[in-house]
Length: 462
Image 1 (cartoon, rainbow, N blue to C red):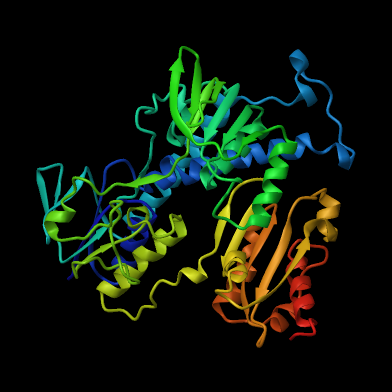
Image 2 (image 1 turned 30 degrees about the horizontal axis):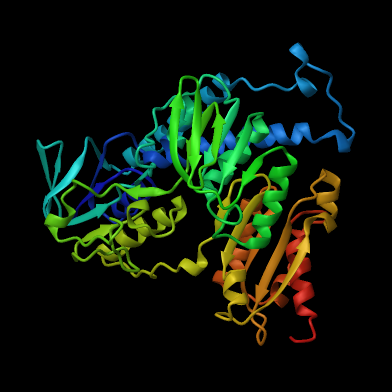
């Protein structure tokens, strides 16, 4: 029986363990903090739970156009709505613990052994836990994740200077929150706290928020943020964050200073690869410390694999899980298809959400990919009109000669659910004709997908 030891119990680790156990391997997971890893306990699950609450708040605050009115609440609270952050955070933590428990139950059902502690490679075939317990391994999977990066000299204190892992211990809603970093995490949390009632300043080092995402989508989202009262500072790089009692001051590189009650740092991730024996075992890391892997999750050492954020390959839970599964299928001799990043659907959990799959507008504009495209504004969709959704669009790309769907962008409420149709189309090489002839419910937001396909189908160039 093949002995497999997995260091890390996040999506990359536990999904790999399930595959390996079902294929008859002897599987052990070494996890320091709890099953589900940071994804479940401190990052993805908690943040999306918080965002779900903030989205509900935004919907209620913007319901006047639908004919709904709320009486003034106690102490003059506008609209009668107020946030009990203690209760919100209690629910966030309980849900994260429940999800971790569900993962543990599933692994126990498959007879996966769980060892609590910190694992490191002491030789290529041995994982040692807390320096005391040796676990022999025929195959090793590294799934140790990553940690929020901090600005040197501006380390979080967990009270006023924060990483997103400190948010769920805050006793009260930040009055004036400065968010440093306008990537996915920064945009998500800045939008959430704006909807919850904080006065938010978003500091972006680039010309716009979400600088690596679809420009049309970022433009829509920035307009929504500004309309809801967020302050966005483009081309503004933070140099230092200092705490002064119950306030913080963010100093920008050009000398400007911004004062607030709290500062949230969202300036990237650093891999958890130091001090776990990778170099000694011969595993190559890149210059940023991420584990180098091929398309089947194999490292420079044949029997050692890696999955998830520690590899730096699209830091998404879905990608981590697939990397872990692929690693086990490959290690145990199963037929396996290498990871294809062009098939990965991604979502930004702002309000509205931004979902993408396949080729990008930037690839088309640069000439890297030859494609035709169409973009339908969401306000033309009958279901969107009924529900009062005005911000967003559906964008679809296809090949000029064959009409094969190459990708798309959806900016809409629950875009994370709508993108599946485009993901299937991309992975199965469907044409716009096939999508156009697929029934969509009327009225529905998904109807904009089939409408976009019909417009491309009837384009004279095709």
